[in-house]
Length: 286
Image (cartoon, rainbow, N blue to C red; front, side):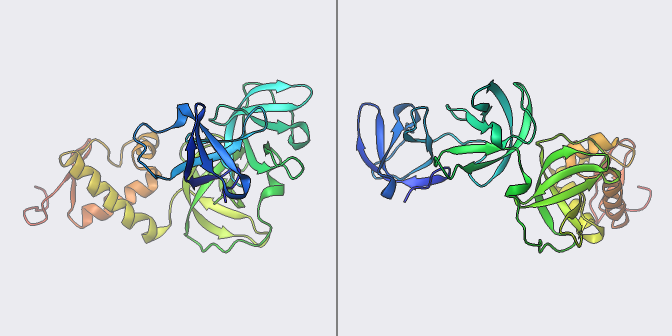
C-alpha cells in the first residue's frame, strides 16, 4: 500500500489524458500528472514517487523530491503567511507546506528560514509542518558510543554554540570552542559524538578524536594529492576556512594528519603546499 508523505514504488494501472494512474493499494488509484512522467519510462516499470495531497485535497504523485518527508526535519523558507490559517513553506513541490498557527512555537514571517518537523495531521490526514521540534524528538536515551559518526541538522545558534538534531531523532550541542568556522541554521553536516550526558543530550564535535580522526584524514589527503597530480596548495599554514572548505575538518586535525604523513615519508612540504612522495626514492632533505 502507498504511504502518504513518503516515497513509494508503484505500478502503473492505466494511462489517461491527465497522466498515469498508479496502484495505491488501499488508497486507490493515484494520479501522476503528465509533466512528471519520465521520458524513458519502460513498460511495466515501477515508478519511484512521493505521495501527497494537492490544493483540492486529492492524493497525487510526483517524481519531485521534497526537502523533507513525513517523519523528518528540514529547513525551509517561508513563502507567505495567511492570517487565517498559518504560514506556507517552500518544500520543493508544486504545493506549499502549511505550518498552522497552533504548530508555530514563534511567529513566522515571509522570507524567514525555519527548521520544521514534517508530519501528518491526525484529524485531516494532511501533511503539515511544525516548528515545535522538541515534541517530535525521541524520548528514550540515545545509545550512541563516543566517537561515533552521526548526521546532524543545525537548528539554532546559542551562547554555547549550536543546537542540532542528531540522526533525525535526538538533541545535540556543538560547542563554539570546537568550531573553526561559523555554521548556519539548517545546515546538514557530519559530526562525531563526544559524549552522551545523563540527561540524554549529546555533546558533538565536527572532528573525530585521536586515531579515529587522523587515519581516515590521511587517506583523504593522499587521495586528493593523487587527483591533483601530486601537489596541493594547502599546508599547515593554510587558513582554517580553506581547510574546512576542502576537507571539512579543523586546522588542528589537518595539521595532525600532515604530521603523520610527513613522519611516514608520504609527503614533503613545499611552502606553500605539500607534495606526494615516492617512498622508495624519498630521502630526508630531498
